[in-house]
Image 1 (cartoon, rainbow, N blue to C red):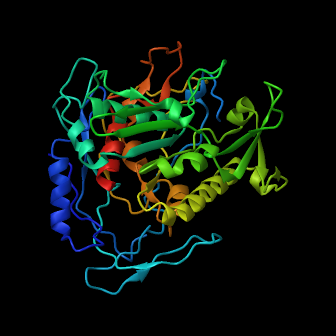
Image 2 (cartoon, rainbow, N blue to C red):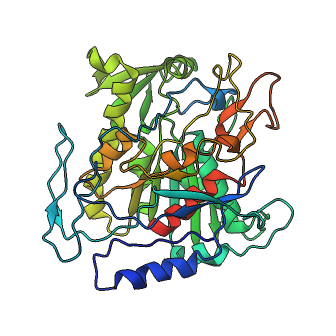
Length: 419
């Protein structure tokens, strides 16, 4: 069985069936691969209805205590788009309360719901490996990304999506013709840093650039004392990261993510202090990490949406949260993810609405799209690194990050389809 969209949001004269067949041809051999069991995501034929519901990394940053993502199918959520049958009058897009968003009216048609579907076993080879596997996926990306730049900006899960994308494009093999162009984007490695601030690679044959920039919070971080190496940082909750403001015009596809650094432990480790309107925060409500995160996500998306009319070539996405699967404790208190049975909690997502309500609300009424991977990833608890990491510590499991080849490959295939 293969993954193919059954409907497409058609805003031009191309028939729905024709548009979806084109996607099917390009992705006809896309296979989802899991460590210990190869699986892939098979989208259901579905149509929503109007009645439906930082910068500073520590060595152990990848195993932080993070906010859990809960999936509650019974909880009512507003749809991102209020859909009408073909030929019916257009409806207004809902707006998020409290946000200064303009109500927009567009003719709405059947939509490919990539977040709603099921995983189906697939015994074929992975998409890539380190053993010289076939590079059949490269042309799929090259056909649409010639002379374009794909940028991923976010935390370590965003870095994994970037790593997955690079492996998918190259087939997992080193290509001497690929150029390291990180200096064009100011990517450097600080003296005490574990990693550089990002990576950027260009494929000369198609002039395609793929880059990743580390920004765990997506907001601007400013040293309070530039002469002190141990200074605290002003975390401007209402300002996007400097990297986004500086380089946004150079991107053709942008994928943002944040979430797993919004906890007290990370704030202390990164020496972050909340600022709003250029001043240290005195709002007691924003002192709550969840409220501060929500303000930042909404502020960044609102700013990005305001820039899109000036950048008609840019397609922007907010990637929903990647779930964690610690059982019987946290990363530092005996939590584990030893399950090796795929889909032990089910294989299908049938809920309406996203599993990440904050991300869904942030993009509602904007031109920024939601890359909704939360619910489908929640079913894959066996796909994490667990205790098999290269630098794994005895008694500690990584139930946050994913094995590659693995689940992030499916995120990128869905991204490709949405592009």
